[in-house]
Amino acid sequence: MGKFSGILLASDFDNTLLYTETARRQGSEVPSVSQGNREALHYFMDQGGKFAIATGRALPAFMKFVDQVPMNAPGVICNGAALYDFEKGRYVETVLLDERTRARGQEVLDRFPTTALEAYHVDNVIHAVRPNLYTRQHEHVTHVSVTEKNSLLEVPLPLGKIMFEEDHALLEEVKAWILEQPWAAEYEVFFSDKTLLEVTARGASKGAMVQVLAKHLGISMDHVYCVGDEANDLSMLRVAAEGFAPENCIPAVRASGATIVRHCEKDAIANVVEILDRRYS
Image 1 (cartoon, rainbow, N blue to C red):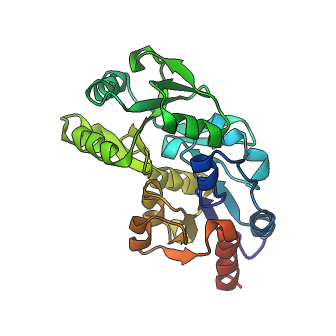
Image 2: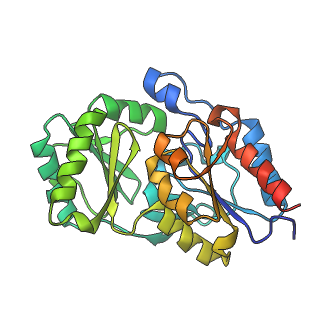
Image 3: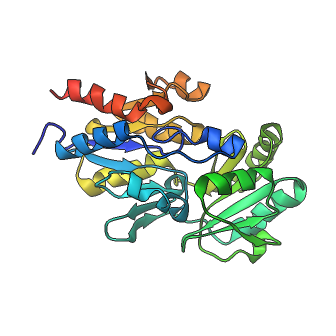
């Protein structure tokens, strides 16, 4: 038992726990998780707290970094499409896309011919249709190469999510068109970056899966804290007892009322643990 017993801290990975934006944009080497963040997480867990990652990454893309992240709870992956137990090597919960998504996603690609798509298969394979510059940037940051397909209809099921990649202005058009379709209510549609528009099944969000995780661990939502920087993090910031965001967060996250902590490059997660340390002293 320790001061953080009964407390869950869930954090986004990219640009929250680890700053990957420079590497993605410039093609430079992806840094390692900082010693300051690692030490803070070890202290949090040693004092009884549960730490979980809550990332938009598919399992193979996060597994490249899993040894750098101290954690003692299952993690939210694929933007809430799955909850994965890293210790036992198995999925705890999944919310998957149905087979109609492939035809609908391909219709989007046909309508917007410069747009690329990544499709995340739960068996740890990332497929890509018409990969573009943004696909290659994403490959560099995740350290996972995509398997190319000529059509989304050729990608095998089951899928956790699909993700469209293009300039932001065009992806806004893509999002608007999707939301106009009669089937739009079957999906969650959100940006995880200006150049990445994600689609998951309705109810598959970080916020929903963090709630599943808290119940799985027997932790009250009154003692669940979440950290994130992007639009795909808003759902978990809203369900948390308190949401935190690094200084580098997008304006919508800042406007959500999240408590702003240090920039990701200055150990934002360690800053959150410092705040909780004072609160639970």
